[in-house]
Image (cartoon, rainbow, N blue to C red; front, side, top):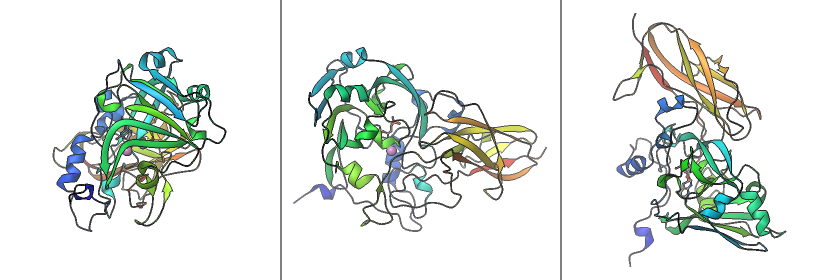
Length: 368
Ligand SMILES: Nc1nc2c(c(=O)[nH]1)N[C@H]1C(S)=C(S)[C@@H](COP(=O)(O)O)O[C@H]1N2
Ligand SMILES: [Mo]
């Protein structure tokens, strides 16, 4: 008999010399990253923001779409978009990063969406805070988790499912968590969750449920696939692992000069220039960025622009550099106020999650 397992494979780590497959490329073509030159914008234009869609983009009609709030609450609610838009309106500028960012650079490579370093964006999300709505519904005193259900449906490693992710109640009640209906001042685009999505500032992307249709309060820990199986830090397949939550600090260099088409090696004329980029962390504000031009052998402090745009947004850094002709490998390393920083040696886990290895930007400075 034909079963789901015939089309849906278990998770896998690539063999030592195994190249990126056509299946990984198929995911990469659907789920694009930010072009790194777009690190220049404080707010990432919607079309340049990275994208990650597990299944298909569902077709939802904003005129009839509703959000239900149910489970362990005194008063279940059902709201349409008009009702959500009448509630208090708040905007947050939020750096969003996929938990799998950096995965394809790991050795060995976890086989999934093959991100290099570009799974990030910084948009302005507008919507209404979730917490007051939960309080209006009346949370049961024994509430444990809040489950968010998207309208998209698929199968993953043999498990057919709606995309669902839960947050612990205390995290769901944080004031900054939004039911967002606008991105950068315009209605959400289909690929970013239209007409409604969750925004959980500081958390990796998987928590920000798109095409949101249901909020369900539970009195037992949620054991759905995306919480219990997928997004966990584990060494091997049998390890229960620990949940992926907040974004680890990362800095990126905006690649200087101009690129070679095929290798994307950067070409620079000799003389003074200013390198720049962005740095962020979901744990605490970034308070230092260091730059390397020799692949991590030596480091020098960068200047940070004053924080702007609020607590959840990336920060620009700059570094004055006057290189001689030759070859260089640039990188930057962020440290946040909690003391977390970025490793130069790769951290490794089986899903390739929360990996914040320092970037490598190959540069050739031409003779004068
Ligand atoms: N319903 C639903 N929500 C989802 C996803 C999804 O596949 N379905 N992908 C998640 C993941 S893994 C990430 S990284 C972010 C990406 O958000 P973006 O595409 O708007 O950048 O959405 C999250 N929300
Ligand atoms: Mo993601």
